[in-house]
Amino acid sequence: VPVVSRTISLLASRLQRLADLSDGEVRALSEAATVTRVHEPNEMICEEGALSSHLHILVSGLCHRHKPLPDGSRQITAILLPGDILDLSGFACGRLDHSVAALTRAHTMLLPAAQLRSLIERYPRLGQALWADMARELAIAEQWMVGLGRRTSYSRMAHLLCELYARLELVGIARDHRCALPFTQAELADALGLSCVHLNRTLQQLRHDDLISLKNGHLVIKDWQGLVAAGGFSPIYLLPCARQAAAVA
Amino acid sequence: VPVVSRTISLLASRLQRLADLSDGEVRALSEAATVTRVHEPNEMICEEGALSSHLHILVSGLCHRHKPLPDGSRQITAILLPGDILDLSGFACGRLDHSVAALTRAHTMLLPAAQLRSLIERYPRLGQALWADMARELAIAEQWMVGLGRRTSYSRMAHLLCELYARLELVGIARDHRCALPFTQAELADALGLSCVHLNRTLQQLRHDDLISLKNGHLVIKDWQGLVAAGGFSPIYLLPCARQAAAVA
DNA sequence: CGAAGTGTTGAAGGGTTTCAAGCATAGTGG
DNA sequence: CCACTATGCTTGAAACCCTTCAACACTTCG
Image (cartoon, rainbow over all chains, first blue to last red; front, top):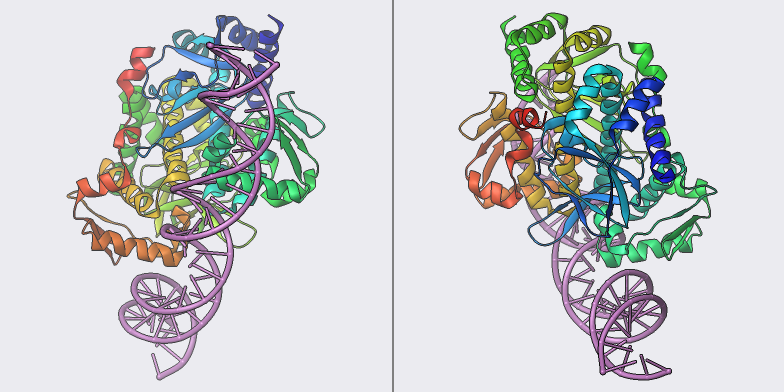
């Protein structure tokens, strides 16, 4: 399937930039992940606390990590795009402490954990790359904490849209400041720590200020500079930095 | 210095639980980190964007990671205790994208990055352990996101106190539901995304409900069960899980 | 003693949530 | 083809949480 090989090359190119992988290492990784699975919207892909024997690589569609609360509400803690690994932290520490669910219809590839472990043993660079990828996840999480704690709902929303567009562009799904963004307003609200109603009003304000247009799951950023300024967005934290890592070593 | 060896053994025992390290591996790590440094309160230890050639291991005192905002406010994204590595993500991906500062007078040990790299090459388990430690950081960050996004200030505060006490107990600094907690209310506010004034009132409410007492930098948890319930706290995410990781491998 | 930093309190204002209702669209079955 | 339902988006109004501004008390320290 062409989509699959394209995705694996997405992941591979990111890892390559992260840790200077050779072609052999990339090929080994892409050969290890073979089985593909389809998930319907809102389907649970990884259960919290589960001890999975396979890693999931997202091929197409969107997923999110979230934590439910006793009162029925929930917080989305990450949004995952094609090329992302859904349950890397579960692999790293042996236990996954959040659930991962599909936002849209999604395709994943399975990578046997045991096989990945032996691959890493053979190619230590691969382990470094995956570790660096997790550092990127942490950097994104830090930005979310800043937003949730200290940014206005308006600014927070702008920042999230910047981040999502930048990441989508990096994986080649978006360009010209347009992209598919098939979120429910309730889902956006759960990501931003807002109520559904207030998110709607904030969105209208962004539209009114002519920064974006968002309808039918399609986002158009009319004023990128304006949106960046509103969100206080700076894309450095999303970019890999292999050379610097190499310089240290 | 006895404090130093105690700390290294703290870190070592955590890593050991994380990835089943042998004594030789632990000894190699502790021999690599030798130089000690002292930092005064509010001193910057790691600068954002810096490309440091050394990792910092916290020996004594408390530190925090934070991100400043253009309007002068800031968000604290992590609190670091003895035995924690201050700039692990900088090592993993080659660039640190947050500043680390001392909260109290603090001692750190320096670990040359190049040396650690070669150590990891020789002892792959060590790399796994550090990677797992970073997964723990991510798990903590996720809990903070949930709190900042969806929990009441009251509940959020309770959760943070539970987390800090649990972590302090794990490194042997706290017991009997008492510990030193030398935070300024302004610092707690910056960690919880609250204003200074509101934090003060929330704290009073916790005191009024007889859950805690906190003065002069000393915390006493009068009703642990009550505090856990108020914060919706569950300590699983703080505990290492080597056996499960091993089971997968 | 004065200065600076920290903790505390009151009151006003604004940002958000909640509740409630109305509207649009798409899918379903009669 | 048309109710009919379900889901998601939108809007209004009241209540509440939280911030801001301001002032004061307490402590430490030079």
